Image 1 (cartoon, one colour):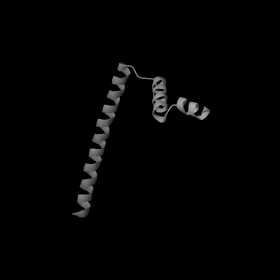
Image 2 (image 1 turned 120 degrees about the horizontal axis):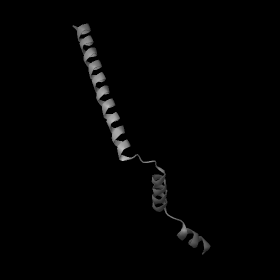
Image 3 (image 1 turned 180 degrees about the horizontal axis):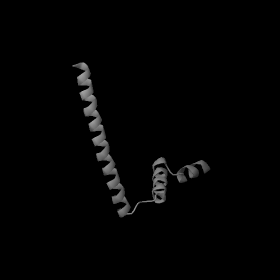
Image 4 (image 1 turned 90 degrees about the vertical axis):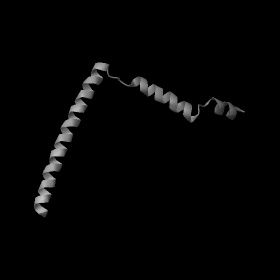
Length: 70
């Protein structure tokens, strides 16, 4: 009978997962809207710059390969 009482009180996997997840979410240091906007701008700038660099490298290497094969 003691086994049944212990089993009934033990939280199942889903309950434990939910409780631990909520606990971790409360520990997160969430950015303010101003910080989030600033970081988003940085990410977009880096994205555009990297796209330009990779596009330029692709163009240069494709012309180089065309010269070699021609």
